[in-house]
Image (cartoon, rainbow, N blue to C red):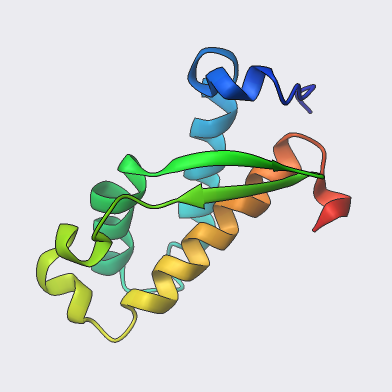
Length: 107
């Protein structure tokens, strides 16, 4: 586990880039095969690549999505799985961050 410092998370891409990359990648891998790959890939590349993780305190993380996420994926936004995949992906990333920074008891 990586030792976590909330102040360092303000500059997360300097101090925790590898952990962030691993959390996003692991979340993708866990959802791969459970959801339509076209939807999962579009959300990963068009929405989550522009998302911003924040530390909320008490071992909790929040992933903020870019503005107008539906518009970023075009027709994929009309897919019946879009909302559930996006929600599951964000939840999984937040859980991965808790785990990587040893806050998994907070979940």
